[in-house]
Length: 156
Image (tube, rainbow, N blue to C red):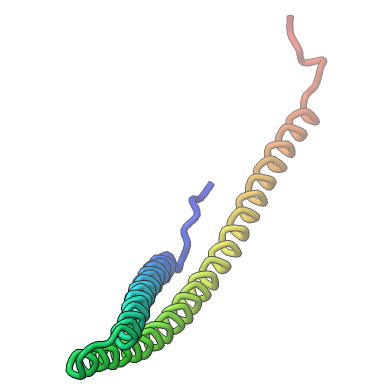
């Protein structure tokens, strides 16, 4: 019985590594997106708190310079929020690109795996046929020896 040897084992290994790398890049992109989302939420909370503080100052009465300073800080936070939203959009596009790359790598690996399965099945069929031929040959020899056997030749 001959051992199974996959002819494209090197390609299979390469495709598995490529898929693994693509999965790691996808995970990193998801992590970066989540971090950007957390940053955006923190800025949004700070912006909300700043707006409430500005309203409280204006309602309670404050100097013009304090109001201008609070308004400028509110504007700066709004600008930072807009930048975070833009970075979140970029992170989202990177996630989508990494997902597509991962799916493509998985598809390429699955193609090689299907070929592996077909080649292994073919090998197993060949082994079974070889074993069947051997058994048939052994049965044929035994049958021939029984045909040549003469019971009168048995000596006691």
